[in-house]
Image (cartoon, rainbow, N blue to C red; front, top):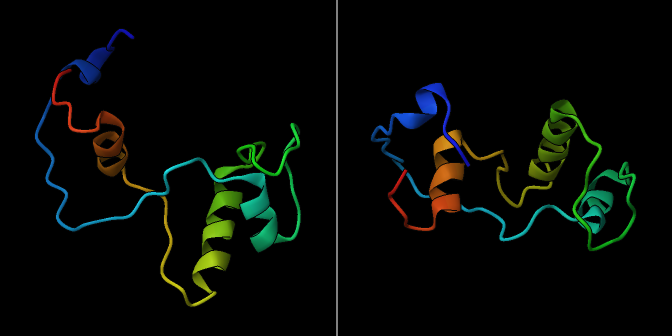
Length: 91
């Protein structure tokens, strides 16, 4: 995939503390267990949830965090890229 504009410039980012990231996309079954409904167009318990807005995801994370089992959030851009790269440091 080609790089555009600032994407071509690699810069160092320090991730100051550890983080957890789910191994798979959030499934429809997981969403429904927390939110009580399934907004996805393409139905399937093991399929990723789709057809949700950023604010709906924030609501999901707030509801999940309120369960008392931890504080859940979306990963930062640096965390996401770190996980996606799986140790690769190339452009």
